[in-house]
Image (tube, rainbow, N blue to C red):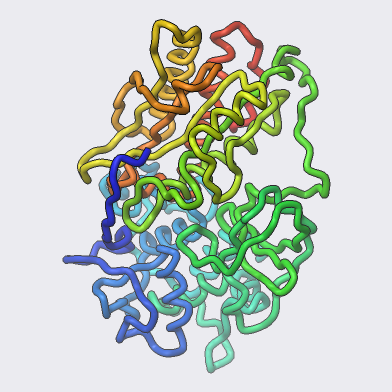
Length: 471
């Protein structure tokens, strides 16, 4: 929720633990990146995948360590990078790469050594890099270094050395790892045409950004209307590389479907309460259009709330519930229009999604409901807010700022149980990282979905079979 406008500029997260300030690469900003790699390095930096040690130094010739490789790949695939305990004796929770290492191991991209060690400081060879990228991007390689090297060369991701070999035993530098990773992500950088647009897909929402890379930090190359047919290729971290007319780029896979007709499953699912098909849930992504909401670290509230709202909508499409959104694109319905829409849809539950703002030290999740003696939905609204708050705390593990009473228009003027979720503080670096991350947006959407199910369960509905939708 917008409580003030904060324009805060900070560097992106560290890729490697350099002493001093870290800087994000800007176009032609690094003096130590050779011209052959400038486009690829700047591309990764634009998406927050790679960092430099200063505004002008990328440390191009530094040999990549296994920990650094995990971070490179983890950020590209939007894996969970939160520092935490791992399954390795030599990677503690305080290691800058612990979250990405554990996530990559769980995905089968990386593995450890005998004795329960990962060797995070071990230097990476070209052959090891080829195996890592082949696993990360789903290339068939037969489980061998030579097979992985061939897979990357066949894709136009890597080339051999002047002596005719791949140089599998040669150590690989940061700049070369960056080049190969950028090519694996975006076919526009490859040495040969290897992309195959073999999937027929349709957009499920309008004003849909098609971006140069697989996250919202990459620039938009244009927008697509709803129900437009596109050709899809590979997927990177929940984003599909598509071709629509003359446009090519990445679209979030959450907003694509494989059938031409958009249909919501409102049939009675075996094992669920038949009454659920008569329940309508209203999802209200806060702000939008001319109203960006709060902002922090060059990221706006309206972007985060829409991303989470669309994901919640997608989850409920696999249930008997009816669902309606106050906005499904970057538009601005007024507060009155939002509540009027909810009423016109015959809403039974209303959930508004927001991000908080405040001092940079403020952090945490809180959920609001409206309480007044004349409001017949106070108890149900509090129940709904409590269930969503509990699920958000489990999903995001931020400070518990409690369930609170709020005299807010979308809660006060509604005629149904209503809650407003403040996911986190957009002005706090840690909270902001989650608000803008596709991984954490998905986690929030699942929390809201599960919180609503918990509410219905507490009200006596049979929703047990629907919990698996969020797995």
